[in-house]
Image (tube, rainbow over all chains, first blue to last red; front, side, top):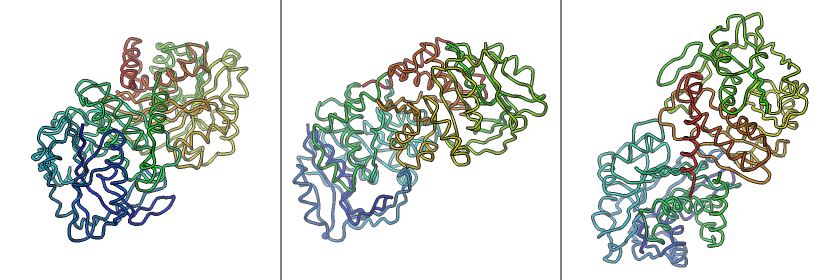
Length: 300
Length: 300
């Protein structure tokens, strides 16, 4: 079953307590694709500028990502710069340069329109809607968003939320979107906006999946050296949607629970290095081993 | 198997977004006892002043708590006042009046010295040591502490830590005690200080139990109306130690995991009201029902 992601590819400059990375490969679509390709072939729709290094283009193709939808536009590539605090739970954005991303208008090829499993990464909700208008009949659509759109583009966000199957939020975003401080009530309120699944990403505390029928609490993988959390959420989405695509079942409660665990497992690799370095090196055996660590951690 | 708690009993004045409580029954020993008595008879060693309401004394006896160790000293009862923020995850102490608690010197009766399961609630680590010097041969000793002692009485804290079986910390305290920002590494570092179990309380994110042999991630109970989180940690301790005392096995991994779940279940009642009102009304059927909700939430 084909997997499609529409999102950003960019160059990240990151400071953590452990070091600094300068203009390293980043972007939501990149992290998602590098995670989901462990489960199913992935096609990426994104835009980069003329300055985007050829080596990064090769990195995607070498890892089996279909980049026929990676547009190269005149101008500079999207850049983001951020700094993490002592315990890596707080992040400060130092600089955002949209560059070619500012004019991004996703255009799907006939093949991409036939995608079965679609991830609408964190872009303007109006663009997410335009992607939905282009896909033929996807089996599962997962949407990511952020506080910026929740505050500034609520109307467009509510419109696209009404058309997707699942939404990924961190706890702060869930509270903000629902206008409700209690996380459980907030997540249930988001269900009322349309999605049949709300996934709350809680970083070092794991994740929670809430549907009308069940609540699943997924533990965090006990990473001992969180090196750089950038991309963890998009990696989670890649593991989550990748697993559901691999078993071609986005409705089974059992598979949705396992998908969340795969999301957490894949994200546990991402945070162990800058960029997608560790994620790219991950083997199927490592993924299964961490899956079983989590199963052991959760049982009682 | 007998359960003993040494800690505080006091009068709390609390503001939450939902309301205000004035001089309501509080204190670590009180919350612990009201939780643990669901599993085993509990004896409480604490001190109150001459102004401590007789109705609160009766409240304990009516709920089966042995208060022969509740000393009434000349002077005023310990008072604490605090205020919670919007999402109840932040707390600001407005006032602390130690009063008779400042001179508290726990003196255990011959019967209390024979306790099998002992909870050293959050008091000065030197007093915790004096309690350990008085008990004969307990099967399991659990210690609670706080940032105030970690920073100000580290030497005494390390001394008592070397003599207990388990320690309860919240995530901030674990990081502070270990001087290590990563929560997993911090908890493992605390194991090196003596305890064979480290329990990290994470509030709305559940709890984590770390031993040399296993790591257990316990989900939070999905409370939809967190009314007042005061006492949740001591209630957790009561459910945790209470269950281990009831099955008289503080070494079994399976029982330790279940004990943490009972801790979370009991705490989920405490946060639904001011003081111990909801906790006091809790029935065995409600406890088992929430235990099964958590089991269902965690499975995959």
